[in-house]
Amino acid sequence: MNTLAKTCAMLVLSYAAIACVHSQEPSVQVSQGKLLRYQPIVDDIVIAANEAVGFSGTVLVANSKGIIYQRSIGFADKDQKVLLNSEYSFAPGSVIKEFSTVALMLLKQQGKIRYSDKVIDYISWLPDWASAITIEHLLTHTAGLGEIKFATGMQTADVIEQIKSVKKLKYLPGEGFSYGNLVVVLRALIIEKTSGQSYKNYIEENVFKAAGMKSAFARDNIEDHQPLIAFGEKPLAIDGVTAYTTALDLYLWEKALWNNTFFTKQILSAAIVKPSLGGEGRAYFDFGAYKSNSDGSLNQVWHPGTYPSHYALKSIDLDKDLFIVLLSRDGRNSTLSEIREYIINASEHKPVKFPSLWWLSAEMSSQGYKSAIKDYKSRVKSGEFIAKESELIGLGYGLNHKQELAALAIMALSVELFPQSANAYDSYAELLLMAKRYKQAKPIVKRGMAVAKKSNEQFILGRLEKMQQQIVKHTQLAKP
Image 1 (cartoon, helix red, strand yellow):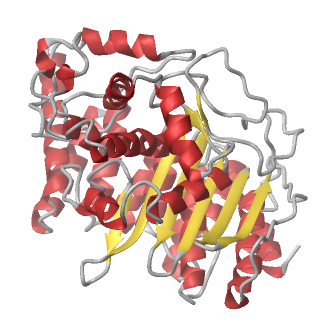
Image 2: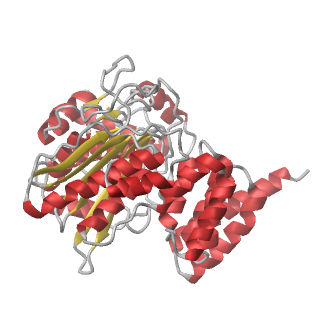
Image 3: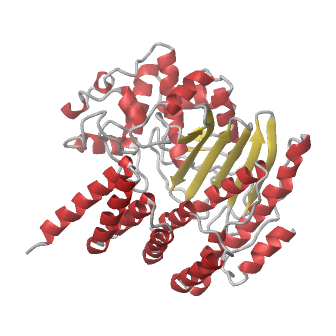
């Protein structure tokens, strides 16, 4: 074990429940001078992530010429007996939305559709509420539809019935933003209608094959069982929503997006940087999030995904020609953003340290969240640790479905350490409302609104105002 990994491991000796497996050797396919330095740097973080927070997944770092580093670590199965390797596929969650997005962009480029076309012209059974929805609304999550009510074994026909049962839209098309998968299924249906092929066949032949993605596949039959899928996915067969890829597939996908395989960089960039109703930094079409340089040129694009214990994060730095693909199945979503940040900092010659949140996660498992948070705050105060708001909030969301009290405590900590952050209040309030803790949420929403007004963060202010309305409505209903 290298020195950095030993240092991290010493912090978490009490975290005995995690199986530390790093027998899978890293794969280096390109050796290009200064790029060699990524190999030990990335290897350090991959091993430390496995030892500190139980990371089981695949890490790939590359440039447009080829792969610099690839390694799989941990286990592929529930019983932790089968070692994970790079041939295992994952369901990359929201990243899958890019496939239907690109398919519609291709059909538009071929003159077969227009973004302004009414959806009802392609899907005649849609209720009257769909009359004003356009294809562009589907691509930008502004149609007024919400999320699928997921259930194990669900197929496309089940989602169609959910769509038919919608009584009215959440808002008029184009006047709001609601991220979800109902619009993605409608995209798939339009692709089928326009192409004359099944969604699966169209995507695999015109999208995956064009990008060179040899292992990727779309599942449209719940009985379709592939042998090399890592444990942790939810068995579904929904057109537009269910697909599987390896890390290599996602690297080839990202390359194809930017090397004019489908359309020019100018077309792709325009679909990303146009202002989104989803907030600043969110891509206009379904390509995740982005960051621009001071001159307005596109710099970084990244896209996370969840499905439900499969996590994905793909990223490109256009200025550095740096590709990062991260896949995991261990149930800790925030690990991927932490690894990405570590690799990016290394690429910028910044000092690199293992995330202090890894220490906190391990200590929460060994001594309980209350003691661990108290110790963490003390170390932050002494300067030993540097708290990061995004890491704390990511940890809180990651814990929410399994350890609600610990998640709320982490969100409370983020507000305490970052009292001038409207985002911290917004995230804490959201989890409180999900837990139906309306009384506790009320002062958090009020303080968050004051901070958001002061910092002129209109998007977060709007979210908090809706939360306030939710609290008022609940209070009225609760009155005898």
